[in-house]
Image (cartoon, rainbow, N blue to C red):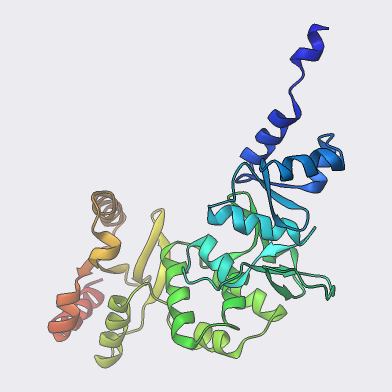
Length: 295
């Protein structure tokens, strides 16, 4: 008899499941937990669960968090569905300008509409799918490719820069994703534009071009982090320091630790600010040129 009381109740099982899914459960999951149709209907009628989509419910609330809304939309679309486009960009924090409905991509040709969800149908490879914070979502590379079809060039460029800043940008993976869903705008950006994290870096590249300085490699891994600009043969590193990316105690400390490590490895490091690039571009060019000659 005691064993019966030791068994967790249905509500406790539901709460445990919902707690791992932003408060969202599916009908199929409830059936697996042993709930009959009437038990589900009773909980809905009593307000203990709320219908979000067909066969998808919020437990005990109306899913105020965006993650719950995203997960509910993905679950409502069945196996293989992933959060995508603007919603995926918001989840990855590449940009935060979602449409009125969550974007979900499905790989089937099913033409059935899902009210409250922006459905996209597209072929996807395994590399296009990831799971982030418990939600099936397009990879950062595939997300950028999808954004190329819904954003203008400037907004896409900002998304690319933010992906770089967040260390989510993978050039090889993005080019591979482009083979499955071509975008001329994105292809041109990847081929013809030196991707940078900020306008500061754009300014430095412009200084190099104007003063006939050998173009550097951008965003290169070195000493356990990425440096803004690298001339590998001359072992010269240039960092452009903006307050947005470097204006915290942690960033300040990390920058100095990296600089010390690179100097010990024999690299010459130069740092320039907005004032340097805006008001003293010729001075910046002279210092870079001197460092390249001396190395």
